[in-house]
Length: 264
Image 1 (cartoon, rainbow, N blue to C red):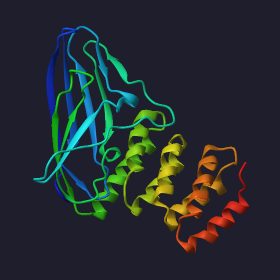
Image 2 (cartoon, rainbow, N blue to C red; image 1 turned 90 degrees about the vertical axis):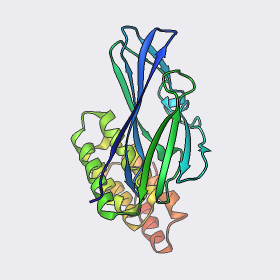
Image 3 (tube, rainbow, N blue to C red; image 1 turned 60 degrees about the horizontal axis):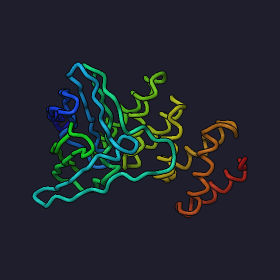
Image 4 (cartoon, rainbow, N blue to C red; image 1 turned 30 degrees about the vertical axis):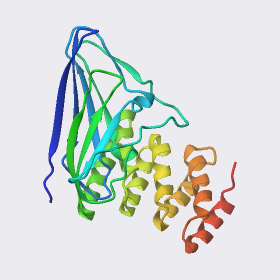
């Protein structure tokens, strides 16, 4: 088993407008396997006796600015997150006196780390004086199936054990859904069985992978759930799209399933 390093970077800034002291930190692992999402946790702590307002932008991600350096290469600016369809979190948040706030950041939403190597990511949030540039170093190691399976297993455990805590389960589901390897399919399937609240996160991941096992899982959802269920309403359109791009040997099984389970 390769070593696991946890890095915690902390920046303290005096906010003149609120006369408040707020700390900004990022926690991340030092090593990841190929195919494993690069996950960090942004941590904000208001140490003052006044409320602190922090603006993280659209969906609490739009104001985050990342730069990336690989090895000894040059820094490159990563594209900002764009406004998209669907619900979004309010960007401005108020942190009560002596309280803290944290949120998960999945760097794969900004950049696809497909190649092994050493990386450094720099984060700043221009809309607020709280977070100036923070540099987070980490290494992506060559694909390790045992490592990646262990990561998927722990994420599945979190989803299974937090049926009454949507935020905790959703954080784990969002990471599991971005694992870039086919070995994640059985974990996605078990997560769907264990926690139906994660349907909208996990079914698109099965569609993205789109191999034989993923298609079988999507067809099983049609067999197991009523036509008015969220599972049915998401799985069937996913199969319709997969029919147009999947391997030829899978087309017939999808066509049969779509005929058996019509659109509502």
